[in-house]
Length: 151
Length: 190
Image 1 (cartoon, each protein chain N blue to C red):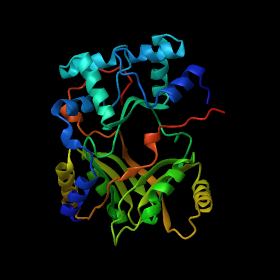
Image 2 (cartoon, rainbow over the protein chains, first blue to last red):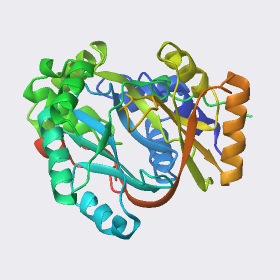
Image 3 (tube, chains in turn red, cyan):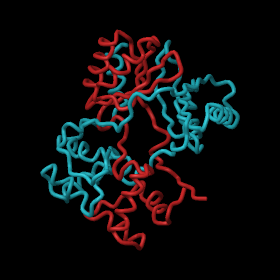
Image 4 (cartoon, rainbow over the protein chains, first blue to last red):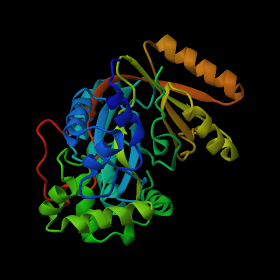
């Protein structure tokens, strides 16, 4: 991958501590010895290329709402219909078919536990199938950010 | 499923959700998709919420110091590009070794996610989940073999669930509908 030194610094140096000042991108630019406009256009480019998902916050799980990974064992002939039904919930942000008896895997988010349980109950009622709910207990990966090693 | 048991379980593992006021929740909704890439991003967020720029900065600083925000910065996308196969590997690990093994797995470049989740017996005996990407199923299997070897997991049950079809993928929205939508740069914040 062809990245400029500026892009590498932006990907590597600011994963944890975006300046909480009124002009954070200008502060980053000053640290790197470039202009604010260069920082902004490089970040926009990295986002467009899919290397940066956003400049923003990573929240501690279960601190700003309720969410869970969920799975269903769906008879193959019903899989497409059930997947479509699950997709229609705005609370669902990932929905995959996987090769297993539990063949439909999706993530459900809601503002609190009661709303999450109500959505899951509604899904069970509308599909006639039980849900296996597997909420995250601990995340061993993303809180570290990424240690990008340039070779 | 037993919804009452599940609700109790969720309450036991949640963070201090009760300490967030309506303004915090609206602020979280406004930044879930990312900060604007403009010279005064906090001012732009503030306008949409009827706050001052300094109030937004102070509230974000407080959310960060109390741990609700684990980190604030450039969120780099997992290096999935160029990989075709994605295997979710689930392990039945002794409870007292989950954290140690989770941290070990995370050090491998090809492990892009690693989570502890509860078992749901008798249907589901697995408590450690990781995502492994590779150019083919064989490459993913070889990497699982490497984990088994190097972490000494010969006696630990595991299964790999390869992805087949993707029905949906988009960013999580918890509170988005509570918040006015701030203006964004074109093409930013999908």
